[in-house]
Image (cartoon, rainbow, N blue to C red; front, side, top):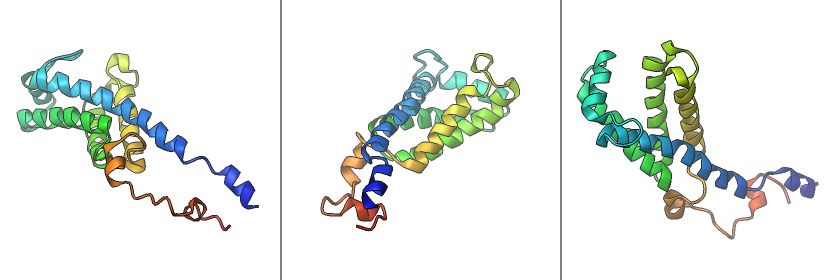
Length: 163
């Protein structure tokens, strides 16, 4: 019976490695968006002043401070996700950032991303929530520094399987 139960359990390697791709799926667009907002480079080169003006047109209070906050969250957050450091914290902050963008700007535009709808920001919000719940996975600084796995621990005990 223990053999059957162990065959039904997914390997622990696959979920850890799949999270690398989830981090990339969120980290790359965040980094690119942050570079556009902070340094006025890339596919959406707004710069802080352009982004602050956009936020002001939406009625956001203190638009320059908000622009710096969002720009740095996306820039630094994207870098931290790519290297796998403070992933849960960064993911929560990015989820909030994307949820605010979804509600404040994209929601009135419908669903398709082509029409500035919620498609992309909703997907990024959900990816961020998934990372906040799961953590960094493999190939992360966080895992290398803080992983508490003990090779002497029986893996069947950690899964709750009697053996």
